[in-house]
Image 1 (cartoon, rainbow, N blue to C red):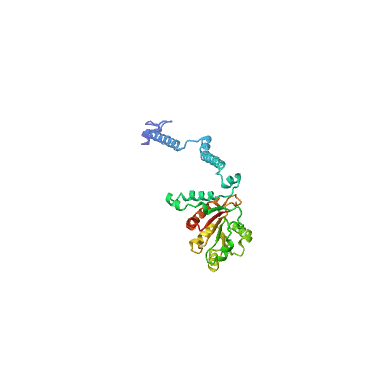
Image 2: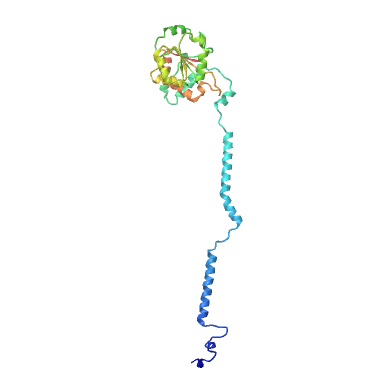
Length: 283
């Protein structure tokens, strides 16, 4: 059978020196298609290169926004600082100090009380003109000529003849030291909260007779509310009206002090003034 095919049988039926079978050709074409398809898919999956300039631009955008906002806040803060609201000390520093007058207290009381009271109620809270007087010199006999007699006749506990209202404890101590000649033998009670507990003041009021009290409106109001301090024997209520603190503020220039003074007047003091049993002095 080998003889029938001949010696060069492998060259027959389309098999040549440089050729191959049709099956081999189709296999090669399929492989080329697969390679082309893989290369195409690889190209599609590869992300497009971003230029360094654009990448840096997007990275700097949040930082630029932050810097811009910080700059705007700084500009707003500088404008707010320039438009700083004037303080009471700035206004008072440019004004000449004037002694308080009875009209000043009457106007202040009416202006503040008109916020929460009706017109009819204001008539009952109006201070009579004769009840307020100006004190050019507090430590003189002309202020209360019957002081010695009042002091001797006063025997009631938990009450006072004269009450002086100051803006601070330090100012109260200063007044007590400077009025030695005026107070004489009368007993003086410190009516402020600094370093003094209210229980100590209650014991002193209940234990003996006190003629003169010097203190702040907050503590005085608290003692009245606790029914420890009785105002029936009170004849003189003096406001330390013209004295100024380090910030050049007077007694009624301090909002919290002014509020407490007005509440104190509303309790019973205005009614005592209208009954002509109490006098208010502006020192």
